[in-house]
Length: 153
Image 1: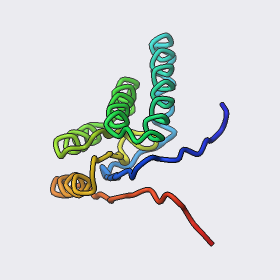
Image 2: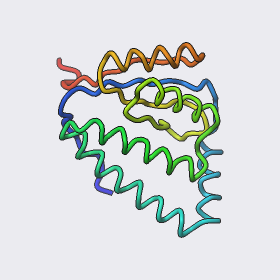
Image 3: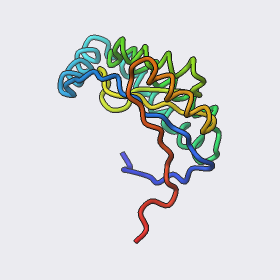
């Protein structure tokens, strides 16, 4: 628990945020994760350790511009989230659409149980295709690019 750390991304991250349209209670999702942990303590600890390792690797991938690796790590993290029970059939459908449209990786944002997913594309053209495929399937999507400078006054 060292707090937040700024990561300077190498290269641009072409991202899509897409909404499942499924509303959920974060409190209910957290309670479900607690039940999973209580019933599967050793598995939960193993998954938490894997997730922490993924975060460290993802920081390095972002800083080094290794977007293929970052996408694979996003997919790996999503498998862990699915295992602890925070996914949803609409999330899984949307992740499948993103993958088939060429996403390097995609995962739940927030608590899970519905809500939104974030997908990483190799290029702006791929990002446009992912967003378009999500919208054709009935999901609202937003194309996102990280501003490297942020607000300057």
